[in-house]
Structures are given as structure tokens and as C-alpha cells.
Length: 436
Image 1: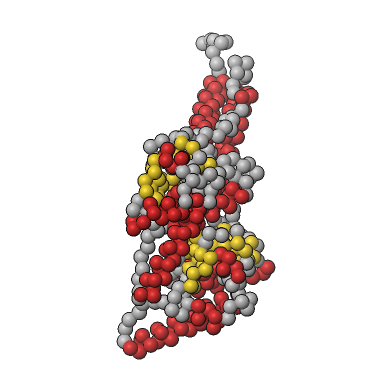
Image 2: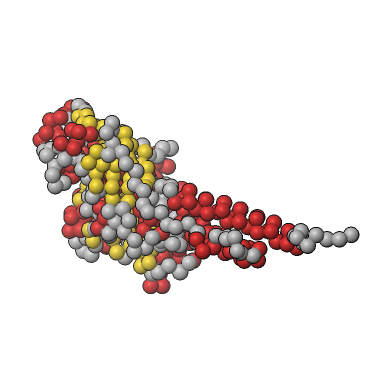
């Protein structure tokens, strides 16, 4: 039996099959990387949908931090597309300050209204260098809203604080260069629950936006693969195999990098822990777990970001112990307030060796409160326990003010009312070290 000299040997056929598989795998990975390159992350474009709440400011902070971490030294613009019909002023201030600080660090931000922006979303938009509204979108402005519980003093305090937030929010809308709307007009148009609807043309005329557009940001795509590694007619099977293996390896490396960025949280890569929302047993356990992981990874500088209305005092006190432990052995703990640090959130902020507060945030102190029942003896025991806990926390806070507030001062300030402080007031009282 004779063999045709032109027929490939089994070895050559096997090599050709291996090359075919490798080239298909390399092409598949390159196509996957190409699709990722057209997505929201690579184009620095994120969607914020729903009410402006604590989760909103947390999401904005996380995604901006990921983008900056993924491309260090690259000042590409960031885009937030927002469609939000409600929210609250405190968390709008937190989101505003997050955007402002990102821009001060060198990354321009565009906020685009793609549907509806309430007062809260419109305030957030004012922090951006570029404010865009799609042609059929709307802005709906209205007064601050809230809920009051308790006696007449509590109601009076709640109304006063709502008005304070509202005035601050109106100020953010009118202070932008080119704004033609006034605070008096905002008050008149939204008085007693009235809603002021503005279409894109009207918002542009009033200086609340910079342009009307529905464009999607598309950044220049990074080249996928290398032209010199594509097969040519003169390549032998051995050369084609080497080229395919290298193509596949290079793209796999890029995909691993992207997967690491996508999975990045506030742990080893950042040294940051977030407490955005209620102080609960669950949120404190999560923060403690992340702090312990950072300590095991030998992080010497940890930052706790706080945007909290307070909550469980006992759980918060336990977290304070973990925060204090993170400073042992020369470690540094920075606490940074966005939005507000109220009640237990304020006490947690005092654990920082350096305490910071964004300029539109609030600090609130009040007496320890709880709801408990049972027999008269049981209730008496609970009352004694609460007073001991309050004494411990207030003493710690007074000590951290460096003598600017005594224990007696703290008790007197919040004897009958919640004591709300702006960032400058908190700085003056020694409750923070820096306004950012």
C-alpha cells in the first residue's frame, strides 16, 4: 500500500486541529473582551434608578472608586444617568459631596437626566461639571418632606430641620454659575406641596442644565489583540499554534484584571469600610468582619465611611471596640461622614484617629433611646442600664472633643431636643478634625 506524498500525516492533522481549537478559543475571548469594552464599565457610565437614598450615595462612591482604581492616573470623564422620582435631602447632599470630591481629585463628571429628576436628583446634578437632560425628560421640584414623631417640641424640631435642609438644597440649585432661578421663586412655586414641572427647554433656560442631549458616552476602545499575532498564509502550523496560544494568554490576562476590578469591594484593595444605613446587628457584624479582614491583611490605614441615621446602640458600641482595636500597633483609622452621622452614627465617628466630614453633611446627638416593657422591676433595670450606656458614650464623646465640650455640656445640649450640627459647627465643637 502506497502513501500519497501530498496527504498530511496524522501528526500534521493533529497539529492543525489543535491550532483550530486554539484560534477559536482566542477569537472567542477577544470577542468577549470587545463586548466588555462597549459596556458601561469601560465607558465609565453608570445608571442610578430609584429614590435618592443611602444606597444611592454608596453606589456612586463604589463605582467611582472602582473606575479610579482600575485606571490610575487616567482622568477619563465619569457619567451618571439618573432616573429618580423621589428621595431625601440628606442623601442627596451625600451624593452631591461624593461627586464634588471626585471632580476635585481630577475626574470630570457628567450627570444626565434620562426620564425624571426630583428635587433630590436635581441637587445631585448640580455637583457635576456637565449637566445633561434628554429632550423628553422632566425635572419636578417640590418642598422637603418628612415625618415627625413625639411631642410638640419634637414636631417643632422636625419642621425646623426640614426647612434647614430645604434652604440648603435650594442654595445648591441657585449657586451654580449661570443659574437664573431664585430661592424665592423656588419657595413660591413649591409652596404647600405644589410641584414645579420643568421640561428640558425650561430647565436649560433657567440654567439648571447645560445642554439637551440623549448621547451615550463612548470612550476610545483599547485595541483588542495584536495584529502581528494573526495567522498568515506563510505561517507553518507550529507558528500558528504559538501565535494562537499567545493571543489566548494575553486576552485571558486582561479578562482576569477586569474580573478583579468587578469583584473589588471595600476590603483589601481599598482599605475602606462602608456603613451606609441603619446601625443594626447585621450592619455592625458586616463592618466588623471587613475591619478584621483588613487587620489580618496588615492594613495600617483604614477608613470607615459613615452615612447613618443611627440605630442599635449596643451593636454600635460593640463595633466601636473593633474600631479601637484597628488602631493598635500604630494603625490609623479615619472616619469620614457623608450625608449625616446621627445618634449612634455620630458616636461611631468619634473612634477615628482622624475624623472628617463632607461640607454638606450633618452631625446629630441625642439621648440614648429605646422601647422596652415588662414588669416595673424589669423596666427599672432597663432604665438603669440605658443611663449607664449613655454615660459611657457621652463621656467618650466629650473626651474626643479635647475639652471643647464637657459631659455636662453634651447632656444639656440634647436634654429635650435632637442637637443637629453643620460641618463647621461640628468642627468648632471638636467633634471632627477636618471638613472635606
